[in-house]
Amino acid sequence: MQRVIAYRSFEIHVELTPATQDTFDVTFQVKGGTNLEVLGARGGRIPLRNGPFTERWAYLIAEIAGQAAIDLLLGPDD
Image (tube, rainbow, N blue to C red):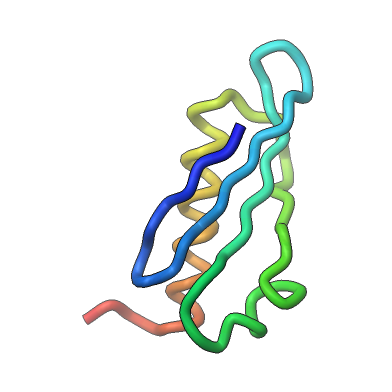
């Protein structure tokens, strides 16, 4: 299951992989913008720890993690 979330001219690509019934492992990847090479392994997929998660939590946590990575790259949104 995949979802793309737009944030500050970047895209956060979230991918869920079934772990058990009704729970998922989740990875995210940030695409777009400039200076992307400072995010992870050149913008590679980043697995989230402490899972598996329910579907709603997986998407929420991946979105927040992606937004935090972008905020670190760009600084505060004034």
